[in-house]
Image (cartoon, rainbow, N blue to C red; front, side):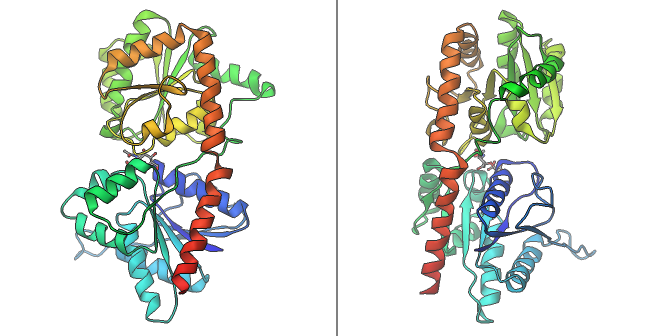
Length: 384
Ligand code: GMT
């Protein structure tokens, strides 16, 4: 198949899923065309079967807001025609599904069929999509998509309830490549120890957080949990990523007196190598429709201390592959983390279960074929 993929190319889970999906599809022999305003950050631009098409957005003095969604629709139609795409797959409904709808209509009048699949990721439904200025058009584009998927049952049900969507929505969960996200192999152990030494002494556990540092991630709760843990035993906290809440988190680390134990790494490539250094992952989010970062940690054999929100319970089995707590209950999260760190046998059992769950339920080689089957169904239906 020739598949066009559109996503937000910068830091963020939906862009990561879209990019990883494109890479996996290309590895299966499909031709993948990314159409976006910049190259998705996990692509290196030289992968076989993967092409990148930039969307130029002209700015004129008359435009207070340059219309990216229109430029995207034009480019989608152009790329689809030139490269004979079979379908488009857009990640994050706003505005991508609206642009895809326009592209489909532009080609339809020229007698060309271009079905599109919309994958819902999270705040496109739970936050932005519910804003009155976006809700009607988002609902329309979801309803008019040729196929719609959601990354968890939670998000699927939320979309049906809040958007009054009557068309079918299929749950296809997020996935992880378990050969890339994995505990470091023995031969890599020495190097791991070497990198680990940057952050922690051999007997100090490393707690890790990875996000785009937006308010929904409650990064300050990560620091508060860690401060309570560090009061009881030596430990280090590694924070990966960047975003609007980074500076307040840095100040809080200072105010809590833990800054010498907290490492802000900013945006990083190859997060798989960092995750594999951690003993516990912290994800105290206000909301997660899935929680991709926790899955990536699980695949690296790292259990997560998380909040019981959205689709997280579909990913983390409380007490088996991680621990779940109410949002904001930093004391309970710290007690949970300490309980595990002080009980190596229990922590090890949880580490094993985390990896096994990632492999058995969320591995790319199980989930990506579900997308391929879904594309085939959409193509079949769009021909009739
Ligand atoms: O909806 C968002 O916040 C944006 C999106 C992103 O691009 O980071 O995150 C969502 O999609 C991820 C990938 O499918 C999920 O793992 C995240 O749980 C989800 N975020 C939220 O629901 C807050």
